[in-house]
Length: 328
Ligand code: LMR
Image (cartoon, rainbow, N blue to C red; front, side, top):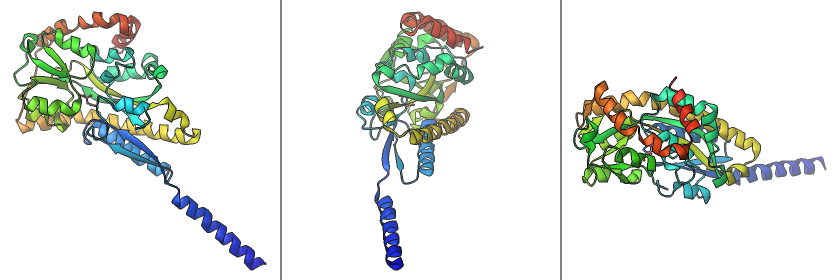
């Protein structure tokens, strides 16, 4: 009988382990629109690495870069349909879901990335993570990319240089107003189309960070880049309330901690890339980098800053004041 019992135990043991071995890990999809050699691209890969290391065999994270799976026009809708579980659109792309995040698009609001970070980490900034709750969207954290620069096929030194020129913008009414303020023509287009639009001269220019201008080769088809630092391009990593709630609490904790670490990693890359990608662009000699004098830059500030007034009622004066205060 002892032999039989032993055999049975061994058999039962084999059965359990083979069930475990055959249980498929739960698939999590993370979709984004940028290249892998960017702060967001690297953050997503770090998130994958940490989740799979900490929940081996239980969860698998599949990252889809370069608008491969979903692009600007459908990634948040796909999230709400649970076709993808994590996306990290730029803060400019949430306008359909909340007007509060428009604050980040106000031109010349933040002096530098330290100010942006202070505001995001403040009570007001943290509250904004919940600003799309009623739409079923959960904000899990911010990720930096950096300050935006203006690129064009002709030199932009004074605001009048932008008159009548077509600029690609993200789908944001604030950004539209910003270019209208210098009598330019804003054209809302998804990120995946920018290179071709620039290359074929369908548009004259665009605004973006050094890492996006570099990784998507915009500098190869834009002869001039004005280092304007006129606005910020940052992200919010979001998931759907439906998916987030469906996770067992202990797994959710591990996934959130992994994301927080991945965000810290992405932020380090963002900080390093500003100088690195700018230097690579400069060394390529494909594009002239224009430095504005204080007076020239002030002209852009004077032209674009009236946009704040236009959006003050929707965004909220208190929120704008809080953001200004983060400049210290
Ligand atoms: C853009 O559309 O220019 C950016 O938001 C792309 C990105 O995600 O950095």
